[in-house]
Structures are given as structure tokens and as C-alpha cells.
Image (tube, rainbow, N blue to C red; front, top):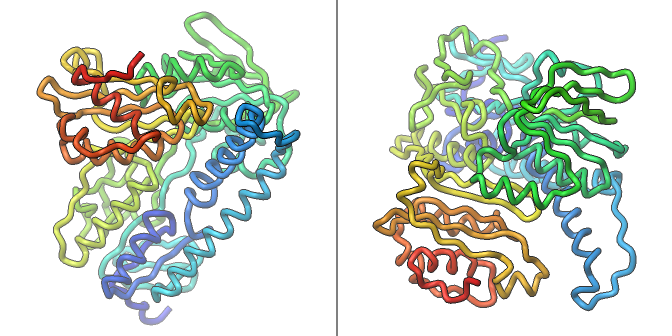
Length: 453
């Protein structure tokens, strides 16, 4: 192959973490290369965040059009098909991928198409190209978990659900986490009969129990089976699942079957033989500066096996590049927001509230139904909860409301900065606005919420 092509930084993976690292490295004057086996933007842009939210945005607008008369508008009859959603998604994804490619080209980053392999001497090969780099960032992401039981032709995962062009009459979703619930939202609104099977005692177990209970009540068209495990699958006509739960054995059928039980890190070829350290979950182990146990090799994003969010990967990219260029930034995972794009949206940040810890907390709450802006929007479902310590320090915020995924940023800043509830209430909150939901819940912590029913 000849002499390897030299770089200051080489990034393996072009997802939110990878391309961010490449752009930041180039901006700091490094000679940067990046390898991506598929499309720039990674899973998030091509098969995850962007496709799912594109579908959901269309569905939410469709649902609002159906109640247009409440707003004094005669909008006629709205129609929505899976084919039209698929076409729109393709346009949105293509535009974003081209945008990322343009940014990399503009920044002078060399791009390579293919899987990067790490050699014993810590050089890399991508196809026929031989590459050497002072620093390497691994950002290869994760893939859907697919146990042997589900290794059946036609079983869908989040990687291929958005390739569907024909709407199934019924869909069984195995896994009641964020992805499973978002897909239940999409397909139940398209008219598919949806069943969600969850192994734990409730869906969305990463969120507060109150959120899980409210969401199940909202999704009356969806059948939920919890504390359940699939023992067998037959495929004579569609999918026939034997489901075991404390209540006995049940049979669940569906024309389609979607598996959403989590993701596992994708480890680049050749890396294990170098002696890299892994966590118990199978992800690459890193220190707070994103450095692995191997000199000059860093890992960011889903390949670590925890905090699998695109926005966390992007933040980690900044920390890794800062470390490479002589900085001292480190990652802090204490105030990572969680977002779920159901209807209403769900978002939370801060310490999980367990029963023992909860008794010592002060809880303020306010219902969406009592908010002026929500009534203007014809929205009534949901709430905001603010939890603070007996001393008044804000510890957790949970929101179930329209645009909760936007509102949570304000709360995240408060939690990250260690604000007390009085400090959170110092700014002026405009009226009528959804942000008043947080204000009212915070005032309720102090017993000062005069608008709470």
C-alpha cells in the first residue's frame, strides 16, 4: 500500500458525534479525515431521529387539521398515507445528508467511503487506502439488538421500519421504550392496529411512573401488555407470538413485527486485538475526556454503550477534540435531558425519583389544562412536575405537554447550574406561553401557585 496518508485526527463514523468531531478538529487547524461506511449523518439522520420525527411532525399536523373547526377553520378533509410520509422523509434526509457533506468539504475534511479497520500498529485501512493519524476518534454508533428468536425474515427494527411503503393492518411492537412508543404513535395514527409488548412492569420505564400511567391512558387505541416475554414466534400468516406474563400465556398476532429492545455498540474491526477496554455493557470504556485505555484513541457516542443520544455524542465530540488539542474539558452526565416525541411530548431531566428519595423532596405540579396558551392551542393533556430538595434546590423536572422537548432545555439549564427554585423564578415569563407551565409548577413548590385548580 505504500506510505500511509498522515492526519492529525481521523474519525471513524460519520454520525452526529463523528462529523461534529471532524468539523471541530478542522476548525482548530487539524488535518482531518473521516470514514463512513454508509451515509453521512449516521443512524440519527438516515434511520433514526430525523426520519421518525419527520413522520411524527406530519402526523401531528394531520391530527390538528382534523380538529380545525375548533379553531374556526374549515380545512376540508385531510388525508395522510404511509407513501406520502415516506416520500417526505426521503426529501428531508437527502437535504440534511447533502448539508453535512457540504460542511465537511467546505472545512477541508477528507472523506472516505467504507469501513475503517485498525491495524496492529494503530494505522488504519479503508478499502485500499492506508492511513496514519496522531489521534483517532471512534464514533461507530450502535445497531438494534436482535436475539436469535427474532432472527426471522421480515422482522423489522428501527433500522428498516422507515423503508416500509405498505401500511400493515396490524403491528406488534416488542419493546415499550422510547423507540417503541414513538412507533406506536406513528402507526396507530395511520390506522394500524398496534400491540406493544414490554418485559418490565410498565412502558417508558426510564421516565416517572406518572408519565407512563398517563401515556397509557392517552393511547387508548394501542394495546399494552407488560411484564411479558415472547417465548415463540410462528410465521405461517403474518406473525403469531406466544407471550408469557404473570396473567398466563397469551397469543398475539400481527401482519408486521417490529423489534425495539435496545441497541448494541458497533465495534470497528481490529480494535479488540489492540487490547481496548470495554464496559460491562459491551461498550468502549472511556474516561471523562473521552480517552480510551489506548494512547491516542478516543470513543464518543453510542459505541460507548450508554447515554445513547445524538446530542450527547455531539457534546462528547467537543470534549474529545478539546482534549486532543490540549484542552481540559470533561463530560458531565448529571443533567442529560430525555425526550420522547409522543403526543403529548414527554421530557425530563435530573435525578430519577425513587420512592425513598421522593419522600424527602418537595414537588410542585401544574396541569396543562389550566394553562392559557394550552387552551388557545386546544390542548388539555399533560402536566409539569418540578422536584426540589428541602432547601429549595431544583433536582428534577418532568414535562408532559405540547413542545415539552423544547421546554426541557430551560429546565436542563436550571438543573445543570444547580439553581434554587427562587432563582428559577427570577426571570420574567411571557404570557400567554407554554413556558409558564414550568413557572407555575416551580411556584407550586413554594406554595405560591395561585392559578392551580
